[in-house]
Image 1: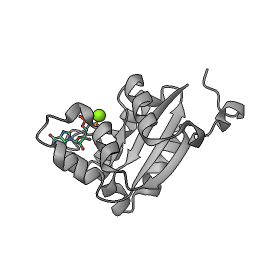
Image 2: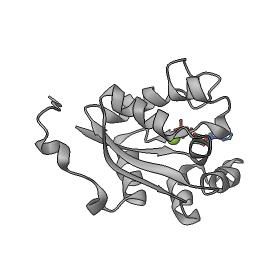
Image 3: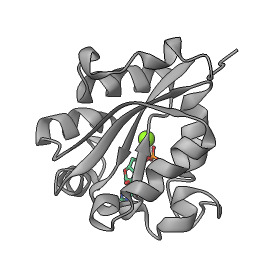
Length: 149
Ligand code: IDP
Ligand code: MG
């Protein structure tokens, strides 16, 4: 069982795609273990994207991600990290395959609608930035409809 951090970015919220995106995640078979909509503060956004501090797009990325409400989730399930990367599709929507969120719902990298952690280290780090442990549901551990073996 893995946990990953997923964000519906402000463009996805503004475009009314929250239900569409959550439905795709749930239909795939992953579970929502935590869910919140809020405007992410600038410090959290800078921490979240700290590996890009020196990139020319860092400033616009941080100001975009904090520009309006976004939806933050902890998504869990077997292989949740690679599966969510596949559900989202390639970073640049030009390369994202049809059937992926970005391949169906986005046209440019700077407005690519969703985020998902790219490794277990990133997932652990990002979940800590956006959630307290007490906000993460433990219910699936007693839900025997869900078999992670
Ligand atoms: P990911 O979101 O698929 O993990 P990353 O390479 O980690 O992609 O980049 C993080 C985010 O930064 C992207 O989703 C995108 O919104 C933004 N970004 C990445 N590269 C560029 C760029 O060249 N121009 C503008 N924004 C970019
Ligand atoms: Mg990334």
